Image 1 (spheres, one colour):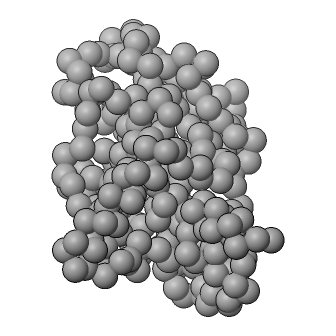
Image 2 (cartoon, helix red, strand yellow):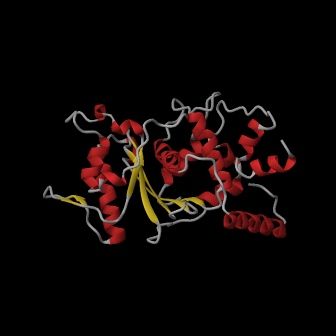
Image 3 (cartoon, helix red, strand yellow):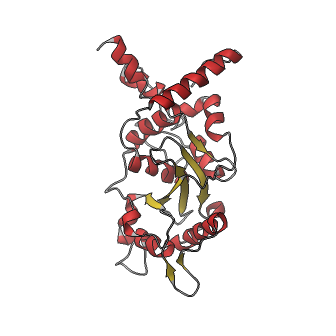
Amino acid sequence: ISIEEIAAIKRTISNVSFFFFFECEFIESSGAMFLAVLQSLDLQNRIFGKANLFDRRLQNTISFDFNKRPMAAVLIQHSPSYDIINAVKEFGAPDGQQVSIHYTCAAIRQYFLEQYGVRFGRQENGQIIPCRLGIKITGDASGKSNTGLDKDLTRNFFTEIRDELGIPEEDFYLRDANPRHVDAWHQMNDYLELHPDIQVCPNQCPQLKTDMLSCRSTGEKKIDKAHYDPHRFDAFRYFFSTFLPQKIKLTHQQLIKINNRENAKKNLGEPNRA
């Protein structure tokens, strides 16, 4: 493999992935941050540095993780080509309380009513108003199982979401199975380090931020859920595995933006870090 080819590959994977695959450097992951690239304070500031990210011009996708504590969901706003990816609002039970999917869906309906002035989904009188906002739905593949709901074995979490939010089935993007944790390790570290426009709103997604910084890895690069179970980060990573399963490929405009950012650091005399 040529030096040029190696340089090209290095632009498509994070430093931790590059060291692992090409320099055969052992990455001790047991007990370490699952999102190893977030050890960089510069990267933390870039991802968590801007509050109140909601933008009506962007598309809306809601990703779910199904656990009664906290029955989490994350609203991700993005451009059609995913050049911009912003986690703008998290939903779910506070302080580890046990709730149903209906609780989370009610919070989502209220949020969109406040932001858009539009009612949709199941109303108090039982009427279901179709959602016309083009919201996409994805999340934990286990939600397709009918074992998650006790009241009716003909239904599952996603059929409940369909009716609670009035979202048509063609706007559901569901995988057959969740990605392996080791695949998520490479994907999320790569995207967080290399994509120039991924942001997580710190005031509207405080638990997601905590999850991303607190999540730990086992020696096999699995999420150590016995140490800390990051439900909102799970919802966030399902968005990437559904819509961006391929290796990151930066556009010409993104490369220019990264280059300008690095040049600005040099001009300020700051260290050149990811």
